[in-house]
Image (spheres, rainbow over the protein chains, first blue to last red):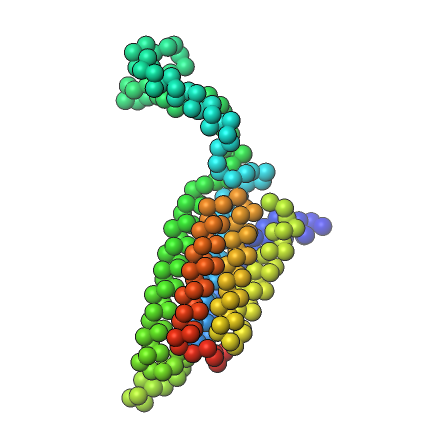
Length: 166
Length: 81
């Protein structure tokens, strides 16, 4: 039971290592160019799986504010738009920030960071997905060019043609 | 996230990754790679990364599959391994 707990708690990480090694094997051992590129995509998604798994918190929800929290924030902003905010700073609830401006985003509601998944890794991995699909597109374009040149997309056949001078 | 779903999706993820790299027909490999991307998208939606999930659904399962199928149709469909 102890062993099962140790395995299942980190199951994402076990699977990420397995998928990553599958992709690495395909990139090295497969001779077909399209298979190599599928292996590269599998490798990339494994890394993204690892990063997203870091940002998961137990019992957390998606990193978006609820409606009542947003409404409370707007209610606070209404004071700032009235104009009286800058003229008559009322009391202690509007502290000035380091530049002397009154801070408009003093929290009316306390937002606990433990309630939300960490959005930093999500933003980083959005970039990684787009870069991944662009590298796949470039690789497939080179594959089509090779097929036009040599008439095959098998790496060993292309090597033989180059060695024997076409 | 519900750990039963987590477990099932992760096991299917490994299965689809292996099948898409072992099947000889490249068109079938492209389609199974689309299934792999969609399972990954489900997993991320369960892990509270909704923005990553719908980007993966659009870009990974959609555009990547189109690129792969276009390349397979313009070159050859058979693979030696």
